[in-house]
Image (cartoon, rainbow, N blue to C red; front, side):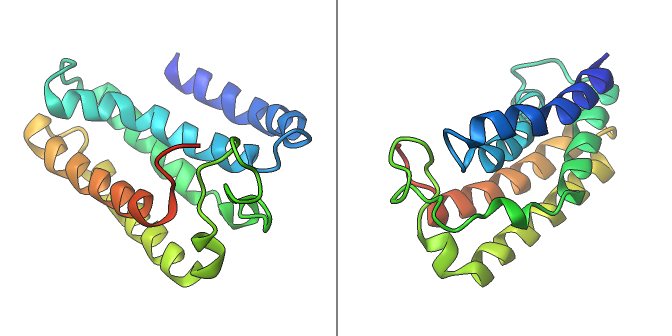
Length: 151
């Protein structure tokens, strides 16, 4: 069920994003990161004990995240789509386009953390929790440098 929903969303996302892109050219990028966050939510809940650990579900979410990291989202970094250009529509700071090497390094760290998470997601909450923490740290590091706190 979850995989079918993911495939449906992945197939529908371009059409939805294209329609929204007319109003907000940052929408495809926002949608991409929203999908990553959607997959991370249950993993974080399991790691914190807010949701019962389930190896099958954890592996599925981690696998979906690996799939998402295979998507080269560089074309979603359209110049002119920062929060300075689109106030109220995105939290992406202009610094992304001023420091693409730094942004890319943070993205690489995120991808590596996702790969590590996928390798241990089914091995119990004791293995999952530190991997989720590492990925959360990678996400936070990028958010701290490249995402505004508010719209």
